[in-house]
Length: 457
Ligand code: ADP
Image 1: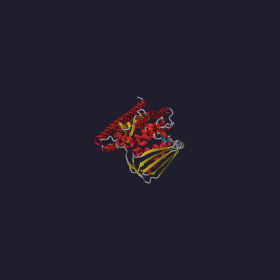
Image 2 (image 1 turned 90 degrees about the vertical axis):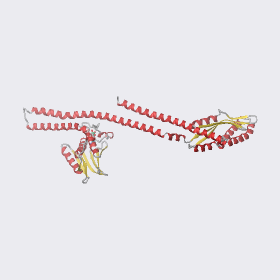
Image 3 (image 1 turned 90 degrees about the horizontal axis):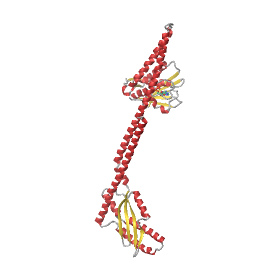
């Protein structure tokens, strides 16, 4: 399967998982809400029954008394109102007064509050009365104040729906001077918080499952992309290696044909020169073959360091001198500044030398013309810090982490030879020593590679 399809399918599976979790949680929330309403609704109804049985009251006695008084007061005004707008104004006044009396004089809420506290339930709620019908009863006439399809009732009904309030009871009451039908509603203030608190376990489990699936997804995709990149880099490596092998082979082939030609006309100097050339190219070939053989050994757990105490300043100086001699035929300068004051570190001298050599070679290979290499070694905090700076083109920011990968070669190496293993090796070796290697570079301003090794190993 193509990687893109694989990634899309995996991402789709993850999205589905998150969607399913979302639906499960919201379904659970609805279930809990219903369960909450049933539990609290039953308790509230129990409370009303108990109030009736124990105290012989529905908790509305004084409220109904005051409503009766008010309605009696208003009968005269209704009888005198022949005008429709006057009647409407009177309706408004009556409605407001009755509602205020209901809210202020009822005893149900206080009883409920105490009952809920005693039952160990959350007692904080808002109450509300939705008057569905109200009539003032005159001597011969009944004045309809509000009827079931009135606007105020509809609005109150909407309010009830929006807040999700619990309808406790509907009352039909006829007093001396009025008749009323109203609903008593309560809305538990902490309902959502209580339900969510009860769902914490489910939330955590859902979150954990999404995090685990997400992490597995990211790791799998990352590994897959890494594998793809590695295989591309391996292909590049094989191509480079083929190219690298061809050069000495061609040189050897030409040199040996020329050597064969000297049979007729032997020229001692020429023969020696050609054999030297063949020897050199042979050395180059065996170096390349060693490289290939080494690659498999370059996995971290397969390298065994042979540690010994080494005086670092001396080692660095001798490596710089050796590098100068080795590349005496090239025009470049290498300067070194060490302030390590007899610092001794336990390192694998052989491997460490190769790591240093790789940094010097790169500085020369990718440096300016002529190449200027500056080496600076000293102590920073509790680390030995070795900086190798060059005057090359620098390394693009997006390449700076990749250059340490196995087989990675820069996009802009032009015809500089290489296998993409030098920096990989430096990183492996330095990390095995408990240290780090970083690059600091800006295009057009050269690059500085920094090795840090802990003093307290
Ligand atoms: P190689 O030199 O064989 O390509 P390395 O692992 O030594 O492999 O380096 C990897 C890549 O990092 C190089 O191909 C090059 O693009 C980049 N690089 C390394 N050192 C430098 C440097 N001093 N200046 C600029 N680019 C560098």
